[in-house]
Amino acid sequence: MRRVVITGMGAVTPLGIDAPTTWANMIAGRSGISRLRTFDCTTFPVRIAGQVPDHFDPAVAVSPRADRRWVNRPGLFGLAAVTEALRDAGLDEEIPYDSDRRGVAMGASAGRPSVDLLLRIAGARTRSGTGDAFVTQAPSQVMTGNQNVPLNAMARLLGAHGPMVGIHTACAGSGHAIGEAFRLVQEGDADLMVAGGYDSLTAWADIVGFGVLGALTDKYNDRPQAGSRPFDAHRSGFVLGEGAGAFVLEDLESARARGARPHGEILGFSSTLNAWRITDSPPDGAGATEAMEAAIAESGVGTAGIDYIVAHGTGTPGNDLSETRAIKKVFGDHAYRLVVSSPKSMAGHLTAASAALNVIAGLGAIRESIVPPTTNLDTPDRALDLDYVPHIARAMPVRAVVVNALAFGGSNTSLVIGRAA
Image (cartoon, rainbow, N blue to C red):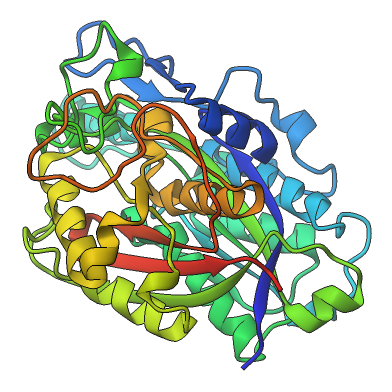
């Protein structure tokens, strides 16, 4: 088995339109959550979200080599992150791998017609009285609704003729994508993979849908930056976000041969399914427990070698309790010696891109020996008694991290990342 390192990363998030800015604001505890700007939310019960800053310009952020004509909003975030990751890895001009040994793996929401289009169709059929009215679309609209289009644009940017993997496992999407890319390089099926995720569920239909499920907080519309409260006793639901994260994965020996300087090494990966409820994590932490145990076992570092867990940490009452119980089961007494934090407290829930944001947190912690905080953790919950790094980033040595993603539908992933030797 080959050792797999991360040699490049890129990001477009509510905390910044590139990876360094995202990391700097994360460490500073700055929030990217504000009043919704994607639609007029005045009459909606939920009026806040983590949104990509308005100065994001795809014409500037996306490589001129990328064909972005048919790419939708979240796909443009993804293309920008891929462009930055290749540049960060020193592969923006020339890629020294055969084209059939390069691939792309991305987590994203499944393609679907826009709700506005569906409403047009419903209205036309109602007005016709026959139920068979036809609503036309421009070809560009059809293309932008296809989930494969951004992946194809990324593959063209890479000149990739190897594996192309699109994964739609909700909030675990980018965790699965990075894990699958890791396996492809590890087992010798690819030499270079660009992996991560992109998503944008901040349209009015998304806000209504998650609100009906009772998953979103509606208590902080007047104080948006206080809305995302992982592990706090007064948490009342998550805050939706949007964005993308992308990473270049290579075999360690090949990366060394071309003079690359890795950000970190992927040491283990696991995915599980608890299949308990569509929206809730099981109270006993099942699923997350098995995912962490298997990833740590593959890594070979042991539970005592993990210093930091980048938690899924949504800020819903059930998820935070379930994840905490899982951590205690896996780590035993060591659970009280390691630290846990959630970037969602600052960025909101980037859904399919959330694990990618967590990987940025983990890599930064290893590289700079500082752990991002969990902001808004004002009131401890007696049932949640681990060290969640409240409010202020903490300087400490970090040898290895666990990155969790625990999705709707019970899909879970865990990655173990360590310092590249």
